[in-house]
Amino acid sequence: MCGIMGYVGSRSAPKVLLDGLRRLEYRGYDSAGIALLLGQTIDIQKSEGRLDNVEKLVQSDPRRLENATCGIGHTRWATHGKPTTQNAHPHQTGHIVLVHNGIIENYIEIKKGVMARGHIPRSETDSELFGFLVLEAMEEGLSLERAVRESFSKIRGQCSMVVMSEREPGVVVGVRNGSPLVIATDPLGGALFASDSQPLLQFTRDVIFLEHGDVAIATAHDLKIIDLKTGALVSRETTHLEWSVEQIDKAGFAHYMLKEIYEQPGALVDTLNGLLDRTGSEPFTLAEQPGVEVLRNAKELVLLACGTSWHAALLGKYWLESWAKIPVSVDLASEFRYRNPVIRPGTVVVGISQSGETADTLAVLRELRARKIPCLGISNVRRSSISRDADAVFYTSAGPEIGVAATKTFVSQLLTLLLFAGFLSRERKTLSVSELSRLFEDVVRLPHVISDGLEQNSEMIKAIDATVNSLTLSSKVFAGVKGFFFMGRGHSFPIALEGALKLKEIAYDHAEGYAAGELKHGPIAMLDPEMVVVVLAPKDSWREKTGSNLEEVKARGAKVVGVGDAEDHQLSQLCDYWIPLPLESRKIDPDLLPFALSPVVQLLSYRRAVLKGTDVDKPRNLAKSVTVE
Ligand code: F6R
Image (cartoon, rainbow, N blue to C red; front, top):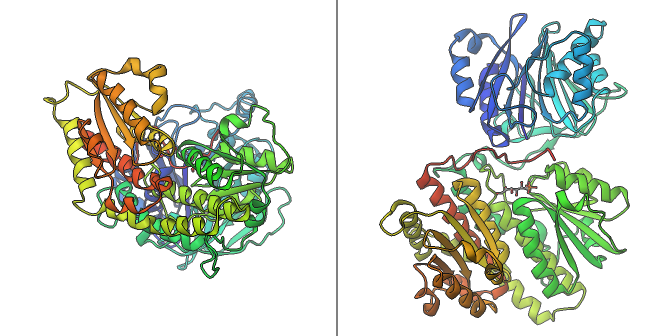
């Protein structure tokens, strides 16, 4: 949830740390700070709010920029204690300074203990308490490394920590005990720590993903890894990163989110290439990898995820059940875990998480796997924690997604589930070869469908702009907009949920997604001229019924934004605003229309957020990877 950076070497530490933290800000951005070794003492600059505040503080004294070559930094997403400067990391206790990501579950007990021994915590955080433990251990004569290991044996919970001490200037100790931590040797000498690989790319593409229970000890001349419990040296393989620095820049787009929406066609092509064996003559042949056999043998699937990934799972159920006739249940990872679900023999669980780090999803996979239930993962981040908690992971190839709101990873997850559905339909012979070939041709066309819609000045883009401009800027048309409903049937229903989530996340509008048939069972009472209803009604087998629901909405005076086939004049005439889907979408099977709808709901939210002036890429209270339950 939080972002960690650490550095020791010959470069300017504040520059390395601030550059790195900027690339990690998506993990949390309610406060930030850095600690720099200046001579024998550690100087800490921290602030609530964004990293810019810290940068100003650091720049206020040129000594920091010129002399510091060792330090640690942090961007925070508050869990224990408010997002204040006091609670911001790094935390200092005596000569110990640390940054922390994750949760210390037994912090109350630890707090009682340290206070009983005469220490007075200055923050409300669980993190600071760890510093007292290290301090006490060093007072007993242990080295920093030993003291950190000793202190870890006293805490419970998944976390990572990077620690320095004025007593051992120039030594940085990092521990991964759950939350991710990546290290690298700086080609100019020295070492780097970060809570994901992106900030390291500007220095090197060769990194080491620490394993659970690894301790890395770095100086300007040495970097070694030892076991947290035994202290024995361990060796970990180096991973050469495929992502480039260019991929993690904005490339001329106003926001990462917009860039990532436009990267969707490429994300689909790369995901297809990554998951399919294109040399096979049969459609939907998955490239050989450990998970394929598990999937092939599944008699039933349980799809578990959170947020947007859960919406992908909901949609996956439609394809898997109707094409492959395999029973599928979908659940929120956070709920499934605590409700003693019945899992029949032959069930395969699939955890879906773009980041591969979501605590709720990982925890449930871990528990199910311990019960010998086969668990697969779908993730966009290679070597993320899900690779440890699932038997095998299918990777999407959307490239780095920096905007907090998921876009290109969402459609890549959809595509992966679609490929699962095609693959299982062939294996289970539930679709004929000719049906599969036809569907496969349409799947390969999906990147064109999306790029057709996204073309500059396409009818779709013009209509989205006009709709949002009017809804947001013109008080003549609308007395006000007090809320949004998104509604759709069948495959469009999960996209309605996703559209509402996107609008909440980045534009802070009250928005709800509904199955179109559900509106009259309650929510319709909310409708009046200040409500906007976005009706997703592409030309599929639900189109007529959704059209009737649209009439019901209109009759209650709500303003209607319709999204549908470019030549559905009957529908477009009923709507106050009309967004036509790209013409390419007429060439694909109606089951695949969610791929045409997704960019529409993403862009609606994006445009509204821009007009409202919110921070699109870093919406308030959110973080890109949610590593706490
Ligand atoms: C929404 C969004 C979140 C995530 C959710 C799960 O735009 O990004 O709702 O989908 O936090 O994250 P992952 O997929 O990383 O498990």
